[in-house]
Image 1 (tube, one colour):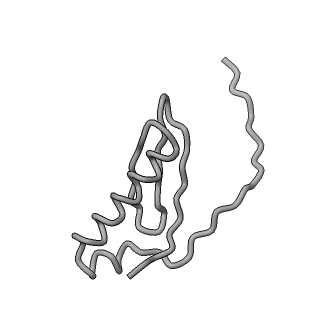
Image 2 (tube, rainbow, N blue to C red):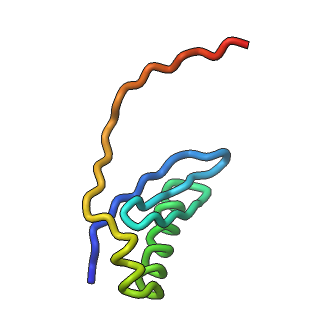
Length: 77
């Protein structure tokens, strides 16, 4: 079964971290492409090894990715 999932990739230090919020699976890589590929591999391994009960418990059918604005107050030292 093919699933359409979300990948959120962000820079962390010298590499990238990739997260799939639908099942809370993460991976990493030295490049965006590597992080994405490693996340795909981690997801395939998760779906291959997890019980249907675990998949059902972790799977979020609706995930929304959006931008928002928040005021950042400067911390005074």
